[in-house]
Amino acid sequence: MQDRNLSRRTVLASATVVAASATGVVGAAAAPAVAHRRDDRHLRRILSTMSVEAKVGQLFVPYFYGTSATSPSQYDQERNLKELGVRTVAELIAKYHVGGVIYFSGWANNIQDPRQVAALSDGVQRASLALPTPVPSLISIDQEHGANVRIGSGATQLPGAMALGAGGSLSDARTAGRISGAELAALGIHQNFAPVADVNVNPANPIINIRSFGADPGEVSRMVAAQVRGYQQAGVVACAKHFPGHGDTAEDSHTGLPVITHTREEWDRVDAPPFRAAIAAGVDSIMTAHLQVPALDPSNEPATLSPAILQGVLRGELGFDGVIVTDALNMRGVRTKYGDDRVPVLALKAGADQLLFPPDIDVAFHGVLAAVRSGEITEERLDASVLRILRLKDKVGLLRGSPYTSASEIERVVGARRHRLAAARITERTTTLLVNRNRALPLRRGQRKLLVVGASPAFPTDATRSTVPELAAAFDELGYSTVHLATGRTPDAAAIDAAVAAAQGRDAVVVTTDNVGAASAQRTLVSRLLATGVPVVHLAVRNPYDIAHLGEVPASLVSYCWTEVELRAAARVIAGRVEPRGKLPVPVQRADAPSQVLFPAGHGLTYDD
Image 1 (tube, helix red, strand yellow):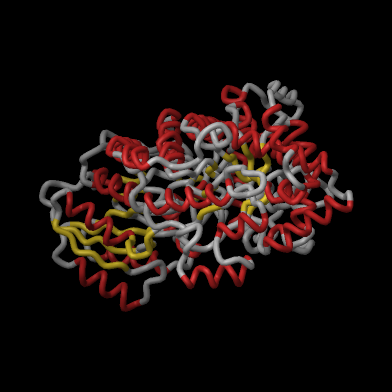
Image 2 (spheres, helix red, strand yellow):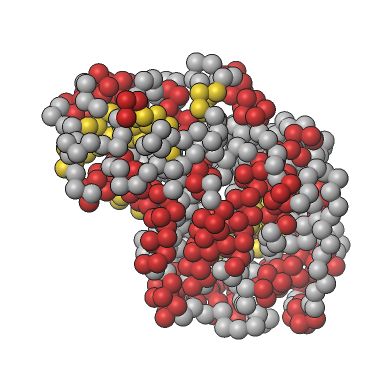
């Protein structure tokens, strides 16, 4: 723990603020932005037709199970009935008048392929338009790319935030947002909970890490602003998260209540600039964080429930007049002090508008409804949030045109060849070469027989595909002869022996690592492979910090994630088909002396170095 804190302080101390060029303002005393005059008369007419129940429902963005709005599988119907009290999302909308829903892959079984997602979106909209006050749903998703992907097969895969930070191109960040946004919009999804605006100054951060653009507030600010513009140019609501900043935590707010110990000056210098930049770029929504920031609210309420943070800082000081959306209300960080009926009420009183993923929709809905009927939440306060949500729906065209998807648009946009080619080019500019002793890379003409071995995380959206075989396939496509062996994040002695044996007769070994620590068996694997005398190339497929634990490897690269597009880019760099161009967006400390920097932010070799 002592080393971890030293490492965090080193990165925090090195964070520089050059956000003035990105935001035009620096510091807490900057004047709040002035809200543009709006003609809300048509929205207020809609609002005037809503019952109190309908208004309360507009605030909620719940999850649900199944690939169809009206006829999910029997298994998903049973799960919906058990957890939501209804069998289908159409029934959920009818019962609670919810203003939106959120899609998840995997556990929620909402996503199979683009055409199915589009059909689901159309079903959700039909259910919403069947309400007494027919208002289309604002359908949401977490499609950050990189490690956090919901729609995989059939859609364009793009590099995640830290990879884009390594690329350093604002144009690439904006293009990635625009491509992702265009494909989401074609599928009937109009709110994406991205980009991450947290500045990752803590290498031990268990929840943000590679989801952040980096450790420098100015660079993160510019990348966030570029992505916001890209998404919103594509007609999708962007969402900067997690306010007031989740980049310096060593605890996951899914399982606990982290505390940010920054002083007010540190918060202004490190955490605030990306959110200022997002607001200056016109971001339509900002997500709260479930953590305590004593420098901003001495009462130590979680930020999601803090009027001082949401109204005083976000709306007052930063001048944000858009939609404030809570992080998921099922997370432990927001449930430590209050019951599930009170949390949404307190979030609204604090200043939130959208209430995401309540653990019990019935309890949450009736908790807010009771608070409105008792006068604890005034109808004027309720109307203010509903009006903000209606503005979002209007902005993305849901209230003035058809909310339904178009088959021809899906065919033209989703996974389009031009999008995939752009994604490949962008990603090739992100792969970072950290070490290249004696010009070990690119691979020489005679190094054709490769062993690909090591940690093999499953793809974010497809557990049947994983890193090591996919990386081997990428080399095969480039003309290499590969064998592969997945040894996992915790290889035992037998797995390590098998890897050493497999290295015999190979021209080179490419070994992948995933989140190496001081006691990681992955260190032993790399050491044993080095001892074979076969040239070893190391690829970190998640954190750039792995190299600090691996000793004298001849060559070391970082891909920042393990998706297909990032693995293919890394293979092309290793093969010498493209130059490595990425630069570290975070510093890497020495493992044996965390107060000392091993590789500074901005480090990245080319083959000419």
